[in-house]
Length: 51
Image 1 (cartoon, one colour):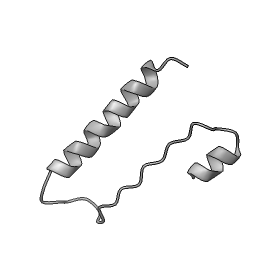
Image 2 (cartoon, one colour):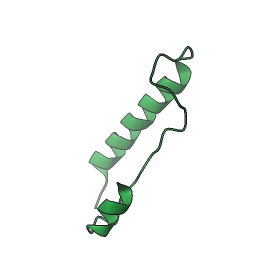
Image 3 (cartoon, helix red, strand yellow):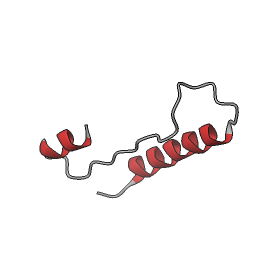
Image 4 (cartoon, rainbow, N blue to C red):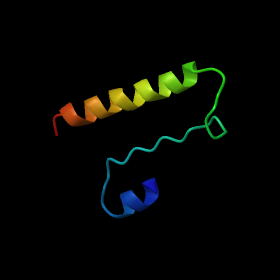
């Protein structure tokens, strides 16, 4: 998907791939919390970035 966006002219394309397998229901909530925090930080930075 990132390559397709770049081909379409979106040079600032970022891609994150979750390397932890599975379909939810993890016993340890820390990785899930860390990923959720990472998403919110990215969103906040993307919305407040000076272009």
